[in-house]
Image 1 (cartoon, protein in one colour):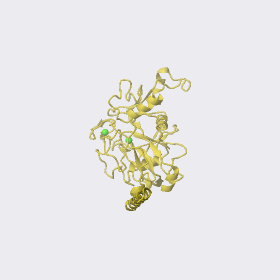
Image 2 (image 1 turned 90 degrees about the vertical axis):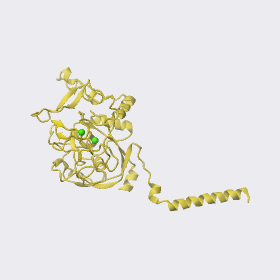
Image 3 (image 1 turned 90 degrees about the horizontal axis):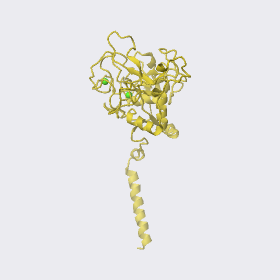
Image 4 (image 1 turned 180 degrees about the vertical axis):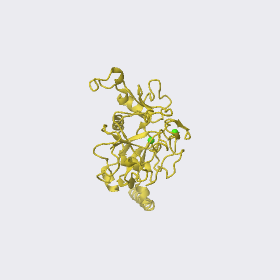
Length: 338
Ligand SMILES: [Ca+2]
Ligand SMILES: [Ca+2]
């Protein structure tokens, strides 16, 4: 046989083998490609009940059927190491590290315009409501409890004292975005639509970093942590997300309003057009935060449930608010999957 004849036969054989392989490999396996970066989990498109009719908290009413396209979400809260890389690359200075401008606050004495943030301190019996929060000069992500504190050895802890604009700046640098509340809540439920917690219907001290004991007076530390814990210290939810319950609250891109009845559409909703919180009537531009924190206790707010929500002012970070990010997939892909 000629050389060209042998080459032809060899090509014929290879083509035949390829066709046989295509026929025996299940199509689902052949086309399943995870489009998410390694540090993110792929959340499949789906429909779920957003909010809750069962908690007794009006801001969670009423449960609404919502459909979300597939997207990628960080498996972990953004850490001090990750935030430090952003600051190193960009020179970014967080809101808590900036002094209040004199032009904006001409009547404030210099010492009250110093940079700082809001810090939690365990309360004494008889303490007035919310007196466990206080302004701490010099508190910021590198010094969570003031100038004397530091984050050395806490590289793998979630970054805190993050205001909305800080998280948005990080997101832009990272090529990601803050999740909508619908994305966040759908991902937090981990496939357990309608369950009270991200893991089921029974509270457990071992599933997330929350507060055990009587908030804000004593913490029995049954889960191993009085304060913030390194990310990934507790089991992941059904979608492989760590600390989606507790540890630190997580910012979303939605404005806050009580309830879910204001939603104008049920597919990929992006929240109301303006924020309003009847508990903070003089404040505006309040974003929704989700997931609760190490300061959430069964006796106090139980806001470590996926349906739970709180409002957060844009000009304040605290010792228990951080964030994680999403990567939206292409519009074409989203259209096909919803
Ligand atoms: Ca704890
Ligand atoms: Ca969290």
